[in-house]
Length: 184
Image 1 (cartoon, one colour):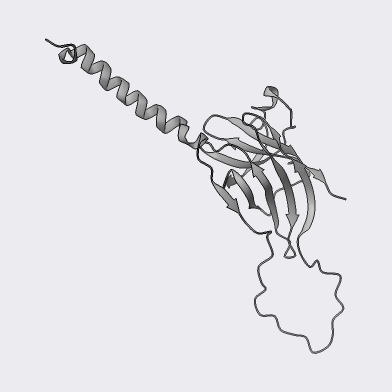
Image 2 (cartoon, rainbow, N blue to C red):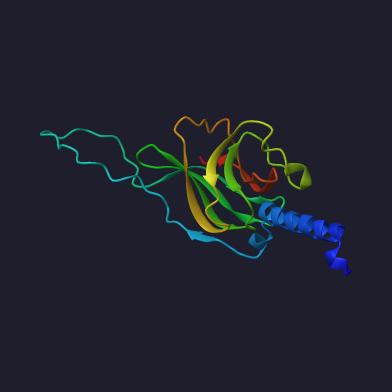
């Protein structure tokens, strides 16, 4: 009787195969070697729907021609080496967008962009703080290389949520984070 015909060996091989499939689906190691590049343009407000022109001139206040920068920060590395900038913009229509500029980080499973109230702490001590308090999930990271835009919901209080994390939701760890400083 050969070794491969023994029931214990066959069961062991079956268990090993199942564990390998589960490990691959959870860890997704190929993402460490494959980049997703994104290059979204600076956001602009949606074009207004037709507006009636008044018969007489109406005095209007100054109107911003483009996005206004509200806050800015530089990403620091946490779990993975990362670089880039984070900018919070207000568009002429009053909506707000978080923009990642020149991002360079590793890809990973279930990466999210979070606005949080957690302090940005350098080193390993800062890896796990962002899910301890308040956070707003702005969606999945669109790409680990390049620039991308994430709409900020209307009710979000930017005075309370003063940092950004590229958060790995699968392993509850920050890949990178930035403290947001108001722009004067």
